[in-house]
Amino acid sequence: MIRILFYVLLLIPALVNANEKIDDQVVFISEQDKAMNTAIDKARATLNDFFKVADQPPEEASDFKLKVMVSDENGVEHLWFSPFKVIEGGFAGVLVNEPNIIASMSYGKVYAFRESQITDWGYVLNGKQVGSYTVCALFQTMDKSVVEQYRTEHGFECDS
Image (cartoon, rainbow, N blue to C red):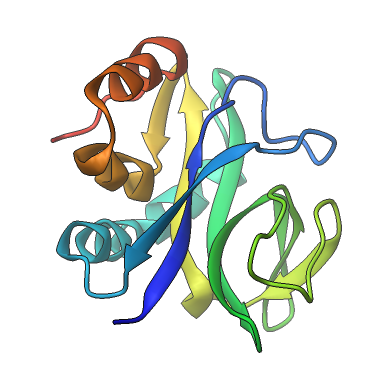
């Protein structure tokens, strides 16, 4: 069974500046994981709504980020990029994770990617997380005390 690396945001406050690394808990998830695939589908289905908000953010919104599936000869990872911008043929963004599998990318550098590679998006609005569906999917497998910490300290209000 193929496993894909996902990252869980651990340090979300004021995080997604290019200068601030997202130190994540590394979680390996099967590419067949139903909850994760549902989360990715939901993120992709609402991506245009996210872009509208990101283009003209409310004053109370911050920390806009995209999770992108990247791969090289070593495997596949889903990594966060912020800030990001539209370029010809897709997007460019600053990698704010330290890759664990992908050897061809480095934290803090700018990379181009296509919309088809985006697997999640997120931002903070009035202290609450919006989006970050893949993180919410991971809550199903995480210790309840850790999930509660995310909810309390980082404003997660997941559906499940």
